[in-house]
Length: 549
Image (cartoon, rainbow, N blue to C red):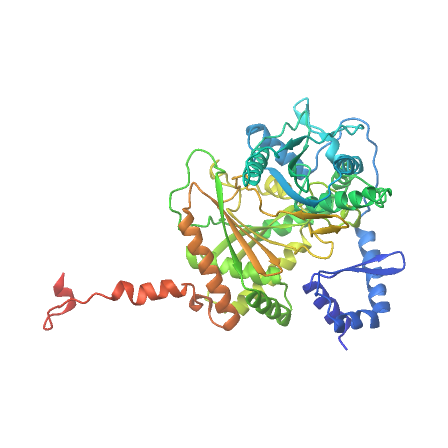
């Protein structure tokens, strides 16, 4: 039988969430992540786990105050993260780079009236979706509307010629994705229903990220599908009222993040980010625009095989790290091999939902963390992964300092307006969608609801390069979002192939020095070894090579 530490470590690696609900132990796990053996271990050590979670909760409550409802009087401030988004929006009010559109397909018998009421109920449930952000005396404030005024526009595409409704729907969805938001007057959420036929509909909802992050998009989907399922069956919503709202989190953040708490967080990041901060020099096809930062983006995707996905997962579990850490270390290695720089900065997001009260809230909680890695002395990949694991755990321990506050405290040298502060590259591993997690498909008696991940792309990117991965039923999907002003599509396609080759080499020999791990694809190796060396020429046999020149 595993020790409690071993069991909890393996559950964490498999992304199994444990929590207490009163005196009852609850868990949430992706499909097939809990093996029968692990489930038996979980039941056997249930009492020890409950006791451990109680101790953790007691320790946490003694250090971090709970989030409680606050008064709605006066001008409500924005959270630290919202403030930065709001100020950036003032410089570029017509930009759609912070839009977060989602497209959902309904196949079957859709009750449009119930759908509209379900969306209203979600807005009624979450104050932040009824919030606008006007300036008062030059400072942004939150104004929360009491009335829910959401209506669902419908565009009928029945009359579009055969085989063209889908194309027209794509154009309309893309047009919506590019529409900017008026943060001062709202609305902050827009919805649109496209009727392709009597049994085929597309719903587009679009939110500005000042009220939304990735986890919030999942929550919106889960809330509205749960409510729709209940209302369409003639029942009331089964969702219990939320004890707090996003404005309460904002108030809590200001109250808690000060004094010794703030000093401890700031001191850690100052130590990690001291000295000259590097700018990653990748093989750009064109130089960085000199005047201002550009956001014109594009993307390229590749699906890694299920066998490679399993091999990476098994290797991670064997070494006591998460798949996130393994893929992050591999991506950093790719950047090192491309740039030749031993000192690299890369950013990744934390959910920013460390308090239990925030788990069911829609809002902008996501925080940006910075990882600084050193590749000196040509370590093996296993040694590099150990460094990344240590750095990630330290970063998670100090994740409560908002990135906006970090910039304010560090005051990094302003290189120019044409680049992001501190870093130019981002990494993300999104959780899989299954068993009610994320935006998994929902099956009703006469209706299937499916999220169309990646259906539209608004053509904007905030960084030079962003790698987004997600575990899928048929493998590990990866997408490179890149700055199209600086990279050609062919360069990014090669980069995808190189990353795949690198991951395959890591699985085969993780104890190989990082400079020796393979990077070229099989086709590129053939090109270098044969295609480029296939020509023969006569040369003098009785002279030295320097005499030929």
